[in-house]
Image (cartoon, rainbow over all chains, first blue to last red; front, side, top):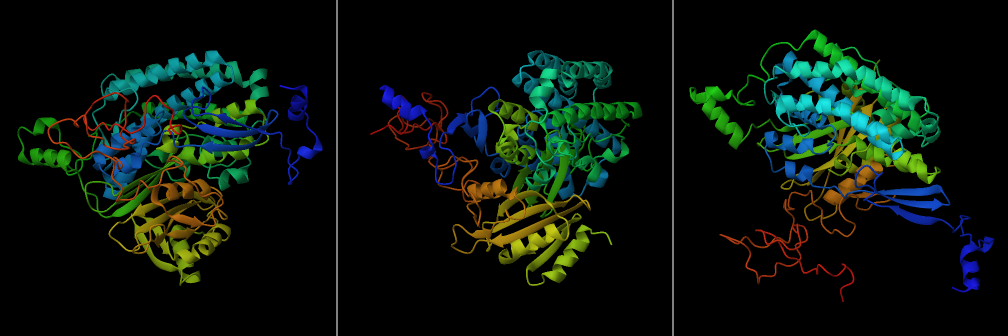
Length: 413
Length: 204
């Protein structure tokens, strides 16, 4: 290349300014769908000027698997299995939201007894801790704190042990189903939960020791990717992203479901809306979730059936099939055709670890949902990402993506 | 007097009586069905005067046999009074392939992506939207998958071959939606016309 050409390319003079006064020396780079720090298949088209991000455009849809369309072809009980796979780091929370929506449609909310409700709260809070542990491990890993990752996954293994004990499956349990739970609680379940709750407070203190007052962590996260409260509400952000910006809103307190109003817990709220505040909100949420789990264990899960007694919705116990004709018929009808909710629609909001998870189910009286739509919290939180990172350095983009805790499975469905 | 969802429905019925088509109360959830033309006016009133500052969700339902065909559904939330509300707009005439609804991005900026998703999956155009393009499907997709007349496995499937595999000399055409592995010969695998050794887009 001639020296003359190099000069033309690399020297900036005022003639290079565009009409609107912007400099033309921005570069558009692709933070592609395959990237270790995008927490999934997220593509960001960043326009950077030096090291500063001028414009960010997310491109999603790489994990779109047509869950909403598939659910239209499955019965309500079958579609439950699809819901695990959306927010794959908190499957029980998805199951809970779906089950509440279907139960609302069916009109059987009053028949859900305390045992079912308290078990659901217990499992949802354990799932919240598990999801936040993954968040902590991966976002610390992105910023360089590599040892936190394995510590978090070590704790998460104990929670997955609990799920495996109950349902046989570590992650995609589908354990919470419309009508109650899929199977009876096991005898070893409480021991495993107590094993976890007895060691977790110390571990949580360890994570705080490692990161919260760590100068490097503070430099990377304080003041970075600020989301102002008005923007948070305008962009529909929810969960720790909304609370990190100072808005006091938690669906478990505002529209209590599944017995949450009977438990004592606080909502951590940040003040600055930066990455550090969202980090602290989630750390404190883990503590509060542990508090709820301890309360459920202390109160004890009451005895009772683990699913509604209405055999037109929940299948009868297997042993009855050989003796009772009705049990056989109900079992057959439920597993071939499925139950038919009345015509109507229901929208139920729950607080998933990522934010406000909503299930909108429209029934036309048949055994399959006519339309199932999932209001994914990560979808709206991701919409707020460009506002957060425009003006930040490129390395702050990684911190920001980690702090909003997106799961592409639910963004794309 | 505190604002509740029920009182909101009454207020809207009173203030915008021509705009309201019907209201509904199912399992305690309030729904207001509006005329599309007055959507933005009602939404602005709901946000500014009745404090429904949070838009949770926009979605659509395809009622294939009905005219108007689509229901565009908005779920609102009032954080101040802890109320939920659902708004619906019915669009889609007899042969209207791309019905249109005014956008509410001016009222709630979060509507941007939700409306893009509805456009992408249903084909409903939001007039006045700043950036209406596909969001989940690939950029060059031509059809709208969540419509009821769109098959679950997509188009371009080979005809069912009763009793066995596709005969090897049948060319099923571009079935890229069912292409799983390039060289497998499973049932219903469709061999696309794309060459597996040449980069797409560079074919002559």
